[in-house]
Amino acid sequence: MSAVGDLAGAKRAAVNRARIVGLIQARGAILVLLLAALAAGLVFPDFLHAANLEDIITAASFLGLVAVGQTFVIILGGFDLSVGSMVGLGTVAALLLPILVGTLVGLIDGLLIARTRMAPFIVTLAALLALKGAAIALAGESMVIAAPGFFGAIANGHWLGVSNLIIILLAAYALGALALNRTPFGAAVFAIGGNEEAARMLGIRVERVKVQTYCLSGGLAGLSGALLAARLSSGLSSAGNGYELQSIAAAVIGGVLLTGGVGTMFGALAGVLLLGLINNVINQIGSLSAAYQGLASGAFLLLAVMIQAGLSRSRRS
Image (cartoon, rainbow, N blue to C red; front, side, top):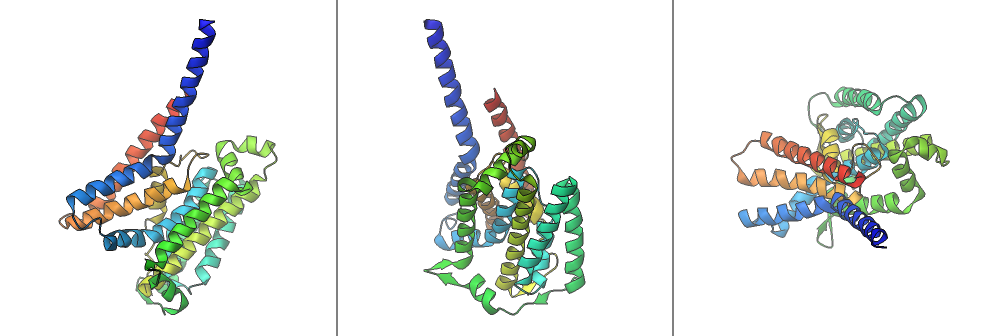
């Protein structure tokens, strides 16, 4: 009888440990973000002022929109290297055109990946080069002046005292979380990322879901570029340089596994804001060059990957 009781107790302990590990994996980035913000507030008195926090979130909103789509793609089991160039193209093209072009590029990427089984790295790298070339062909290396118009009013306006860009960012993550956790599409994304062949056997239309996911990623990257151009009233072909890697870093820091099948939308948002916090702190220090931003972001990414690997091993055991 005691042996049965011991076995039941061991099972309960294993289940509880798995729950705790899963909670840390899903919510750890949010806790780190809060602790980092508190620490920065103690060191820099102006850091926690509402105006500075608004500046951090507003500046992070463009990367944040890209990271929404990237999070879907990574959970699916892939990644999208074309998003940075799509943002750059979006800043030099007509404001509504980038959203359509981004969705079209995502459609092409998704079809190639789903139908030909080509590696996402190769397909999206090719798209990155093509989009960068298109942006340079449109604008060269010079800055393009963009008419403010409707998008300008959105990107530079406020509603109830809150920047429209912050509202758009939070709405994108709320809708992304809803789609990821409460719709058949989101369930299919998790299933494919966890085990593509098992998902196929369950009747999930894997090719369709892949195409839809890459369309979503491309469209959001185009939207980010359009809003960035409207915010600055100008565009530059190199505007989105690095967004492809930063969006991946934000998602991974936020608990999304590069192997697919695991991740949360608000964890990715915490990763985006953590990168924005690092940039803001380095700017407040003043004596450090921009190179330290990349160094600090890389250190956080490496630490996040190491922690995620350890947590994954712990859950399996």
